[in-house]
Length: 103
Image (cartoon, rainbow, N blue to C red):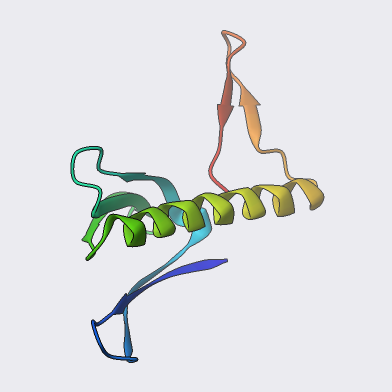
């Protein structure tokens, strides 16, 4: 899965690709609680082992909410696919707590 962010310019049908990340490299996503037109997600570059925070501002809170909900659905689909493929997505810590691993 790849997640693409498209910026839809007002009154135009043209879309411009802003960035593209594989869903397995997105570790978390959120929408700002105070300004609902902002959302962000964190990615990891496995080659450099660096984390990057991507913050976006859109015209309406509905657009930001749609992106966050779509990401949530993509996480769920990726998780279900990994389960079907027999991947183990959880690890037991020494204290018995379960830790999730990004897909």
